[in-house]
Length: 225
Ligand code: 5RP
Figure 1 (cartoon, rainbow, N blue to C red):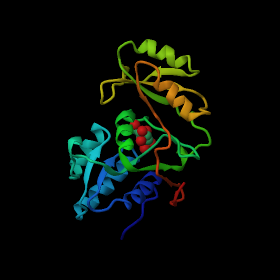
Figure 2: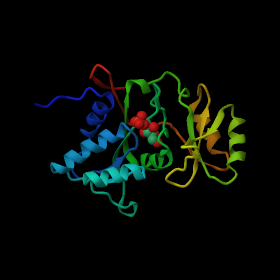
Figure 3: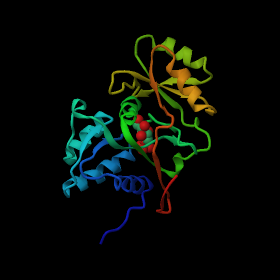
Figure 4: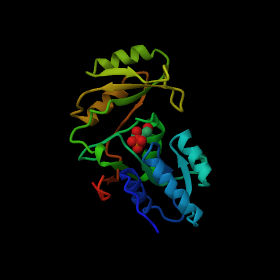
């Protein structure tokens, strides 16, 4: 018996994996939705799918290793054919907020070198305006208090991300400031204004990068946005 999952994240992720073909170089996303894509890729690799992969976080790299997905160093990557990743928010123009899991920098580096970025989300992530989810901004540790002041001046409330009462450190050794903008009306302008601040490494706005957005619904259906 092959019971189909009714987990919206899982069904969206599994549909995205159908776009992967033999010979492709695949970018592995990060988070609880990308997890299901990596699991499904692992099953397909076990059944003979021939791919090479790169991961957007140490967490996803470790999962890929456990599942036997062949990983290659970036020096061997010419182009990434398809990357499957999650998002924290997606608007109608497919602009994204990412970085809830703290992997936004590696995710953006890999997305920007991918022919196709497929975003997989459950229906709760689809929004009319970005900004309810606090925008993650990766900053260097040095002088982060000053960087935080400059971010505040853009009209948001930035908070240093903490885990177990310690500042969260990214895979790249930086901090994350989660910025409450309430509503982001001009995602592109907001992206550029943030990245112009010295000390900012990158922010979680992904503008015009998604090639497909696959949404899983509570009723078990899955649709492309
Ligand atoms: C990690 C990310 C994730 O893709 C995003 O936070 C969505 O995660 P999830 O699928 O667990 O809801 O950007 O940095």
